[in-house]
Structure formats: C-alpha cells, structure tokens
Amino acid sequence: ACVHCRRMNPADGVRVLAWPHGRVEVQRLGAMLGPLRFEAEGHEPFEPLQVAPWADEPGAQALPGILRRLRGEWPCVPFGRTDHPPGLPAGWSRLEADDDAGHGHGSNHDWHWLPADDALQLRLAIDYPPGSAVRRLERRIRARADAPALDIELHIEMRRAQRLPLALHPVLRLDAGRIELHVVHDGGGATYPVPCEPGLSRLAPDRRFEGLQAVPLAAQADQVDGSVDASRFPLPFDTEELLMLRGLRAPLEVRFIDRGWRFQLDWDRALLPDLMLWISQRGRQGWPWNGRHLGLGVEPVNGPFDLGRVAVPPAGHAAAADLGVELDPARPCVLRYSLAATPLRA
Image 1 (tube, rainbow, N blue to C red):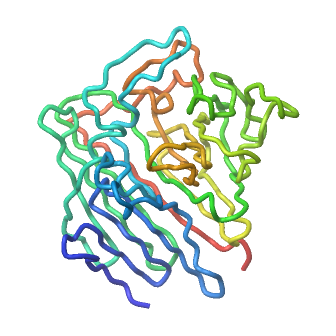
Image 2: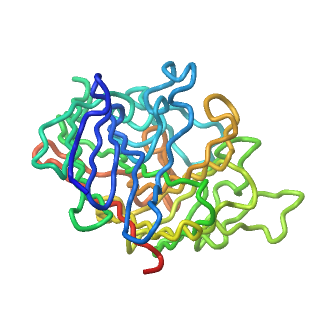
C-alpha cells in the first residue's frame, strides 16, 4: 500500500490521505475529517466516525455551514451555541455571543490548503473576520506511518487576549452495533441544565452523577430504576442528550464490540480537562435530521457544556470550574490530540 495525498474533485474541496494502515478524507468546509477508515492485517476495515446522510440531498446547500456536510471530527473555536436556551435555572447569567456562527467561524466556512511537509500530512488554515479576537487557525493532520492512527495539531493565533470556550468535536457512529465507553475521570458528571430537545430528551436536567453507569432519568411512565447506563450504546430508547464529565485522567477508549475494534481519543487534558457527550440517537425530528441521525459526540472541552458563549453557570455548579482557555496573541496556543484504533483481538 502506498502513501499518497490526492485531490477528490475539480473544486479541491476534499483531499484524501492514504497510508498502509488507513485512509481519511478531509474537506475544506469546517476542516471536517471523515470518512476515516483504519486497517489491520487479518481484520475487517474499521470506520469509527459518523457521516451525516443528507450532504447530497436537495436543500442541503441552504443549511448552515456546520450542518451542510456534517461529518467526522473538527475543531470548534470558540465552542458553543449562539442562541439562548429558554428556562436556564436560577443563577445562570446571560452573555451575548459576538457572532451567529455556532461552534465558531471555522466550523462554518471553507479553510484553505497549505503545503504539506510530506506525503503523510495534510494542512489547512482559516483567517477569522477582522473584528474577531481570533486571528487564524491552522490544522495539521498526520498519519502514523506504522499504525492505524492520526496525530492532529490545532494552532490558534489571536489578535487580542481573551478567554474562549474551546472544544474538539469527534462524532462516532451509533449504527455499528454494540459500543462501550471506558472513561477515567475524577470530577463526577452533570446533565444539561435544560432538556436538550424539549419533549424528546429523557435525562433529568441539571443533575449531578458520579459515573456514566447511572445517569439520572426524568420521570417517565416506563422508568424502572430512575437511571440509564450511558456507557453502553445504543441506549434502550431514542433521544437527544448532552452531558458532561469532569476531570478526565486518561484517554477515552471506545470498544466497538460487534466490529472487533477499539477506538482511542487522546488529547491535551491540561487545556481541555472535561468531556462532553452529545448523544444523537434518532432524537431530532426536523429537517435535515428527520429522526435518522445516529451519532455520539465525544468532545474534549474547556467550557460549560456548549453554553460558554451565551451563559455563565453559578458558582459551585459542576460546569463552573472550567469556563474557557486564556488565549494571548503573544503566545499562540497549540492543541495536540490523536485518533487511533487497534483490533480487540489479535
């Protein structure tokens, strides 16, 4: 198998990086990475990341940039929604986002290609609008020559000092059979302060919990013990949820039991100490979701859920400890992380 990078179409909107242990597509829109395929001799190829099904459907071009070709993994600078969810509990104070680009300008616009250092790398960058505190992002994606793994760097350059909520946004497939999450953390967890999707979400809002094995449910006629094991998927019901784990102490390991692979996400936990889970198991019903989206966002974050641009939690709240990364134009921030896989059985 050769190592190569090539263009996918005349507009150069997508490039492919292939190496002996895998293949990945990267698009200019949002610098999104996916599909991603890992390979190991004697095992079926493994594709851990979701690709939303609507990219080529009529009307997709009218969607916001982040949704138009939603897929895989991408960085969010600054991270978070720009609207205000109704019904936030008492003590949450309101902020105003400085633009309407959900999850940041870079998640919604085309990046430009940069020359790669060698055949194992892809590089992209994007310049932010003149009024933004962020000046420029650069993304470097490198395949490990001897392993099914990608090493990624995000370089953040600032125009002025500012604390910003930051996150990475890997989204795993939930249509690949049984999945188990193995997370080592020492800060407990918290559910979203309001129902993620009113009338659909099943978790009890604004509640703390110790671990994913017992996340509290809202009152339901069919509930048995009042909690659900959110470390095993698919869940026994369809839903849309956000929850947060604090103080990660080790890489995230995800076992795809029926595919026979182990996926590992490792990152700089000094910069992004927490992990937000976005559970999208056929929960959203409107276009383009149409009750068919099956994705599990495993999102390293420094910020209160996805609310860091529009709200501040009260002191003492589980999400109040990490409100963003202090960024300085004199010291560009470099965030390093990796996506890797190994077969469960030799």
